[in-house]
Length: 564
Image (cartoon, rainbow, N blue to C red; front, side):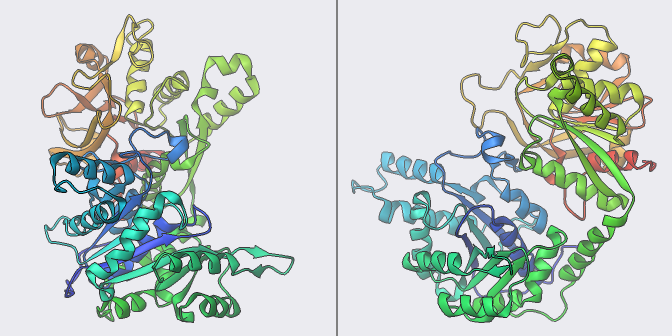
């Protein structure tokens, strides 16, 4: 799906602000990403900003159970998973400053106060905090994001949480002021709400939307467009009632009903005139021919077609399998690869702790069930993670893939457990382990990286995009197109012990890619195996629907019986 556009200049930066009401989880991120696709299809260069009203500086120290996946950017920013949605939908690369949190804003204000920038004034939420938010948005919106070095034409801003949350109040006020700073002709407010269905006849209820719009208007923001989430399309009576009570026209009430796949959302919105509404509000012309949208439709329809295609089963052995958001980018990378190999992807989730001997003794039924799923899979993936829970099960999964010729991909921790398994069972290094799990292990296969802080958790890992030169010809190099090196994103504190590399490689587990110092192991491949690959970096973060991540593509190709 080519993403180059014929540049259609606008007279000034355009902003689209996406807010949400009633409850969280309505799909503001997908709505914001879809609006970005429509703006891009009209010829605008697009960037995005996510506002998270929590006090954490970033998502780096937050539990996956609490917040879902931590998405990592090129510059090492540990951010909200919605920035991953923006990057994948728009094929852009954002910066850590595109993720605004209350913690970041207050930290910046306090630092300025300590320097004396406020000239002795009493520092208050209004104007100092709200001004900082506005300045931040305006500054970040001009950072190039699509790789051509040119400033964007439009910025989509998503405000996390729901209208009325006390945490969001300074941001709502800042955005209220912002519309006058940039001019009302340069900003569009889109509010996402819920239309519940009640009663035996399935009546669509509008009262929650009426209340949330009333709250938003009471705070000084009048939405220009309402995106209404519902299981089925809005009926005309519902649309008209919402328009009458919410100070918008019926054509500005957009039905965001369930669709066959996530890539149909921009098409659904465009079909209801959203692109033209944005053009009318923000003053740009929508061209008759929009190749980006045509290509997008082709991709979305291809995804629907794959529902009837031959299945490929990938067993994902992890520790957060009850919460798929914890592995969102991994899921997307697997999906993108499945589009390329024309297979229907089935992810078989396995709680890795259920593969180990402890579960075998305490709950043999769970143990047998987990192993049954693993053994039926066409490929096995062990993703990244932290902590000892489930580690022995992940090691067992890697061992099974190695011994039985099952395609295997290990990401970050997945590389480390595969190396531990190899050292235990091939090199006969008794009790080989990582110092993360056993500090005084007699055979430390994975060790704490020397430059990493042992006292601070946030932002102290090896983070962001780093180059990995290939040291020899191999499957993974071929998948990357034969390039001499790759730039991929990292997030780890531990690495394979350099003192053991020669011994490991002599036995057939080859580290085909290392960092630019030649010491740090980045990519491993097992000799004489259909596909047994591990990456210390996280290739899932750069996967795109039209450009699947090479390591994931290799896994899906091997699992589908295709030649690499």
